[in-house]
Structures are given as C-alpha cells and as structure tokens.
View 1 (cartoon, helix red, strand yellow):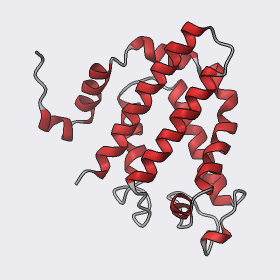
View 2 (cartoon, helix red, strand yellow; view 1 turned 90 degrees about the vertical axis):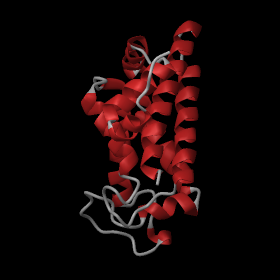
View 3 (tube, helix red, strand yellow; view 1 turned 45 degrees about the horizontal axis):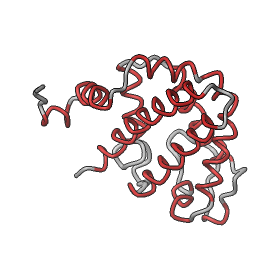
View 4 (tube, helix red, strand yellow; view 1 turned 180 degrees about the vertical axis):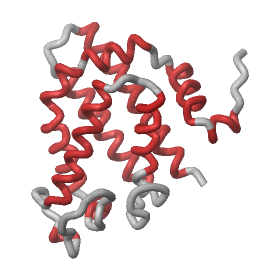
Length: 190
C-alpha cells in the first residue's frame, strides 16, 4: 500500500497532480492520445467555443458573470445583462481565452507549467485571482465542465476515427477533464 501525505495534497500542487494522475491512470499514452487528437480537434475549436458560449448565454445564472469587467479586458463593458450580446467585445475577448485554453490542452507539454496553468483556470473563477468581484459559483463551473466533457466526447465519437482510437481518446480526455475539475474544485474548498 502506497502512503499518501494527505495534508501535502492541499499545499503542493505538483504532488497533488502526480497523485491524481497516478490514481486515475492518466498515463503518457493518454497524453500522446490527446496530442494526437490535436489535428482532429483544432479545426473544431471555434465551433466548440461558440457552443459553450451559446450554452452560457442561455442561462442568466451563467451569463451574468460576463457583465463585470473581465481581468485583462480594457474595452467597454456592458451596463446590464441585457446589453451583453454574443458579439460584445468582452465576450469576444473571453471566447479567445477559451479557444487558447482548448488548444493548449491538445498541444502543450504536460509539465509543471501546464499544471500551474490548469490550476490557475480554477482559481481565476474565484475571488483568489482575476477580478475579485467575479465569483462563479461551483455549481456553474461543474455544469460547464459537464457540458464541455460531453461536447468533447460527442466530437470524438462523431469522428471518422477507428473504434479503438475513439475509445482511447474518450478515456484520455475524460481523465484530463476530471483532473481539470479537481483543480477547479480545490479553489472552492474552505
């Protein structure tokens, strides 16, 4: 039986990520599968980003978080929720961030720098980073991650890949998104 230093899981990001990847069985083969899917997924990123934002726009509980000024955005901000349209410059700014995130998932080396980035993705949705006035409730983050996971799975399953490659890809991306979900949830813990 392997000993895990549980308090260290809460303070050492690398240790936490190593534990999670080992426990889930997220392997080098999974990373290669994800990187190998870049050619398939990269052309679909704009449509996936649009689908995510259409879903976010469908609910006031998710869309309202885009009214305040987003960290790093210098343009005009909407006065009220009704002013925030899909073509608003702040939404275009946020869509660019999501596209870069998705591209990074399928192209970046899985090293300490990426782990810190994935952790920051979780942190930026809380008052701990970015605009401290934007606090996205955990239920909204979990809903979003579930939607993204389903969209990625649907893309893979709808592709022309052979069945074995589809299975590997779905499993690899599922593990990756669970890793990301943990690195979101940890910033909501009291």
